[in-house]
Length: 326
Image 1: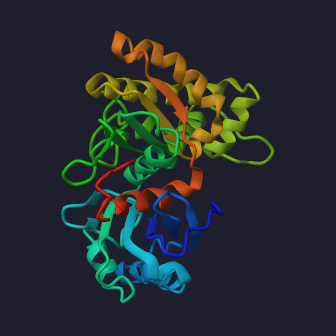
Image 2: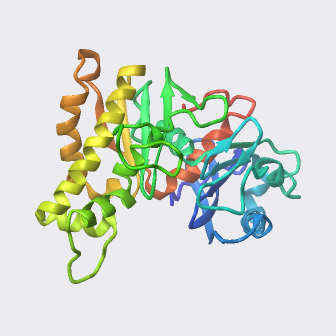
Image 3: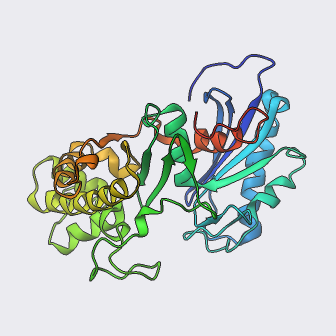
């Protein structure tokens, strides 16, 4: 957590980061410094009321902080899909919330009162964070990816966050990169997420005959450790994931002329095991002259990105906050 201390009169932003395993809350200053952070486990199998009760608990704790009196807006980054026009969320891994009016429910909290409440998807929030305070900051056109259990992404175009009408623009995980590939739960086939997510990497490795070491770790983290040690089957699983990512990134760069692709999430923690084959495959897929200058870099903000990004969304609601990611 950033230990910078805001001035006593400085406005603050409240932030919620809602995912399948945790609900985090924080207070962030207008320069993007995370001043206070807390989290509770997500009751993922709970109904809509139990899930909202966990959100309320986080808001209750934030409202007890001395800085709450300086909060001027609340930003929420949530697992999706989201519908920012309706203020609703339908997270794939939270079945209790389907079309749940999260924005309005959060606004009913007594401590929120008349504060503006801004909702966005978690990958869009990460994108806003990385462009405001992280690896995408020097660039006007960016694709920021979260490669973890799934693959999420967001776009910055001409220096501004591009959310689309419903807030799902840049949903790279569900473009088809293998026309006859695996069926995807989204209803399509051969989606990038089905090849490049941590879940997909572990499955690809297992299907090829890879077996974990003495620690028995069959997750993508275990595959990454094996790949770093030179295991050919583990390396092949990461190469396949990198190829899918390269195809998706190159297609996006060709469509909208990107300057940078920022990659975060747990899978990015594999380091060179992922980034070396990704660079190789990009030389094949990003073939047009205007795509060859594309920079690919790891995300910088780590686990703080969700809260800083939610605050970046809320910052747009401030009187001088019509700058999306700057």
